[in-house]
Length: 122
Image 1 (cartoon, rainbow, N blue to C red):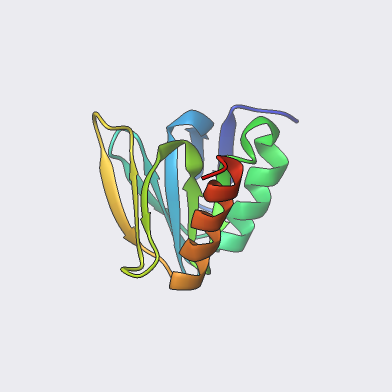
Image 2 (cartoon, rainbow, N blue to C red):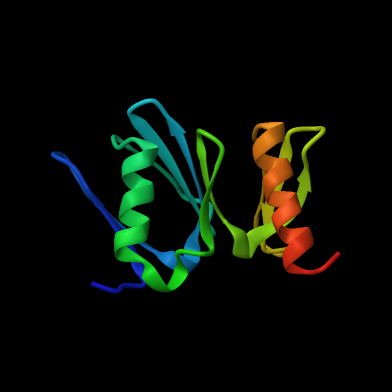
């Protein structure tokens, strides 16, 4: 079913998040921390790999924007503002209401930077 929402459910709760408001998901073992444009963050008891699968199943129209970066991050490329592999830093922002500075592996950020350089012929 194509949707503009990511719907997550476990034994205790159901969470429904509009795809365009999803900024990033940080995984930590059996938990994932979901961050949205409005500053909300919600911890769910789902592994990042399961959330990644659900994104691909539920949000087909946006799957190229929501990508996994390394072992512990899924980011919305729509909000990509800055990448610095040497500093292991990525910044996600809409340039108005939020700015998230995250850490990721040098290798993952180098691949992401290379992708954008090729995509935009830099």
